[in-house]
Image 1 (cartoon, rainbow over the protein chains, first blue to last red):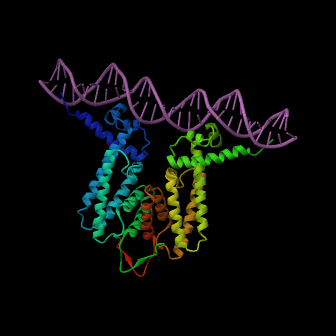
Image 2: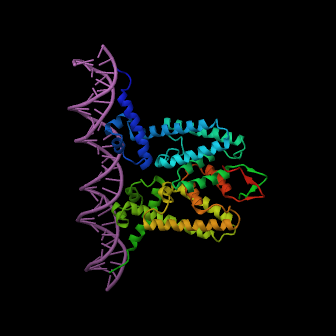
Length: 192
Length: 192
DNA sequence: TGATATCCGGAGTGGCGACTCCATATAATC
DNA sequence: GATTATATGGAGTCGCCACTCCGGATATCA
């Protein structure tokens, strides 16, 4: 009498998650569950057995995504140059979101509204970004008068961008300049 | 034998457009046509008579929106302070997009893909923003080494933001700082 | 006010997509 | 290899929504 999930079931669950990330990433959250099933080489029922609801599937995909990003952010906490680390993560997340288009859709979104698990994972990511930011600020690479909310907002905004990579990169540089500490006594144009 | 549209029909068309902008703005483009009809105090058939397709309705709403924004941008071309004019328009568009949430969805989007009329209106807006930018640059309020594509990308990105107004405002200030000319010989932190 | 071209409302229709049921298959255990 | 708890697939159900049809208004004009 086996109490654990059968290994084929586990494998299916994994493949479904992978495919779901790909499909929802490419076609947006509006993609049909049936397509996920088909591309995973599995019946629809199987999808619904593992994830009782389409929303649950979406959420599972999300959580995994958040967690991965958080891990990457945390890994960068050990980097030599805190300024580059911060910018690299920013760039990485934005580029990555461009691929998985419509996932970042509601995902990175204004987090924390509902579903416990997703909200938790989202907060984890947010905290990791906060740490990255603080470290960059301590190192003098990012000005001290900015705080997480607006930085995270910028991150989310930029990650939903859907232009070609080059334009995105240039736009990012502008944002980085806005975040940078001004050295040498210079001052930016007056703020109104 | 009247050849022009009956005045009640014209009025209905107008009300439908208004309501559609509101409904799609509030609930996203996924809102049902029936809701638009109901809130406009009109039968569904009437909506479809004026706009043969839901997509056509969406597009009509969009075009109107683009045109209005373009007009506002053009009006600001006569402003005294080109820098403030540029920033004001940026702020205005972002705030406005926050209200009409899911309209800016695919709208401001990476314009110019398909539907002739919408693409045209979108280009009109883009050009107007370009003029505003150029004027701000000539006045020394915006650095010379940025160009329309990345600025427009920033505009689109920020307009899809959905946080509270204050955070959005702070994020915008960061972007403006990134766009600003640095005075007094100061230099920003090295760019990698 | 009467004639008529134009509009209108709301009950269909068709398709799509989320979710369920159950007869069949297969991994796990002996 | 036999037994059995666990999984599986795909046909079927149900509701939602874009879009159509048509008998009945209503504006327009004389």
